[in-house]
Length: 266
Image 1: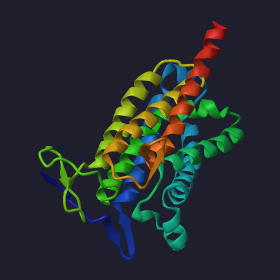
Image 2 (image 1 turned 30 degrees about the vertical axis):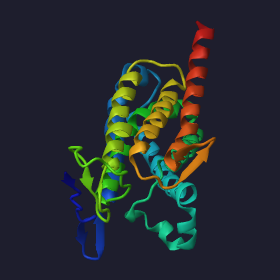
Image 3 (image 1 turned 180 degrees about the horizontal axis):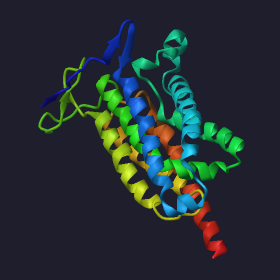
Image 4 (image 1 turned 135 degrees about the vertical axis):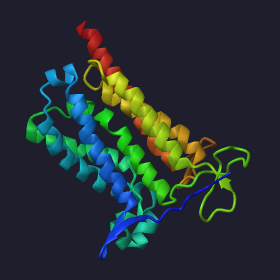
């Protein structure tokens, strides 16, 4: 049985300034956005659409605002409103973790709409471009959650080779942040990157991202202790599954529209 390494969440300090591993993971996420973006721009169909390296830095600025503001507000409003409204100063303590992907997803869409208006680009073209650049950044964030010992998994069979003793829990659990980093992050990246390497109809890449992430998150949530649960017609689902269902519906709708338009133009 594995034991959570429980590393110090502070990577290093410079005088009174403490640099947290969680923040470093987000810096890595933004760095890989720029690195992968440069690779994506070299793809023939992307270059033909007029994308340039200079676009990346500008988009990243807007994207960071969308991720941080949307992610934090999503955590506060969608997942733990009672706690944060009772402890409002904790809303600003982002170094402790607590960023909602679903809130960040909405935040980035809004931020890209503003950027697109500034640069004269359609928002769906922007989202199609950046969608394959997102999953590895998400994986980095989940590794940050693991380092902080956040998002523990449900009870695991002790015979499971990777069952893990988690800080503050007296039984072995699934290391769910690592599951989500691998499935919702790395696996999604591989599939989406391969899909997006060739020309696709407008909205198709965004739709595929939304659909695949929603399905992956619904699956990995089965191994994670839920933030809270809701029941519909006798079926109980976690908060993460609840907020992933609209992403699945959105993904199906975008793909249907994208390929219906392609068929009608054929």
